[in-house]
Image (cartoon, rainbow, N blue to C red):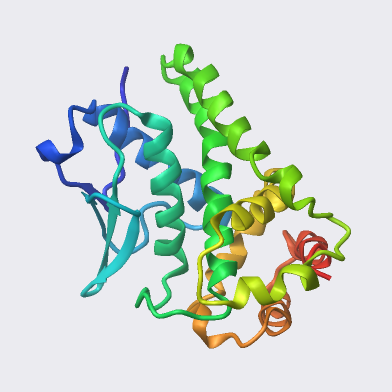
Length: 242
């Protein structure tokens, strides 16, 4: 197996990670980097440096001068957990907001998009395993992803035709994380991003999520920046929140 690495992602090795196969882990981080840059139609490895460190508790992306630090709690060779956690935090890294930890009534939207990044990259991971002599692990990734796609879908019953957002709007704005609901919203949007990966270009224009006072204002700005490769998909996405 000949694995690749991303020069702008620095995985710091130490015993707190357990005993992972670092070659595989670095290649999985490379996979996330390249899959997102392909969707964004950007040059790979063109972002600021990103240091990946171990830390117990909830994964986190923070600023470190001009660079970012991503803290993960994954350990050993639980590869799906590595990709799930890293893809979420790397999406925060690419959005490149303030990362101050300060609450915003629109923070739920960024958290949902980052949850979607985890789903999207787990889907990519299946193909990665099949083409990198890890075929035996692909069924496990498929099961892991399917469990995430179904665990909250029936609880919240969100319709792609809209009509549900007003029911949950106040709960989403309250200073409290509703991760199951974020997952359900991400699952609803997931097919759109699989069908048209260029829709990921919206994260280049979100910036500091705290600068937006409403979902309508944010979508209006995203639509004004949209190009032909994803403008129609973005309109379908906006309709989901009508």
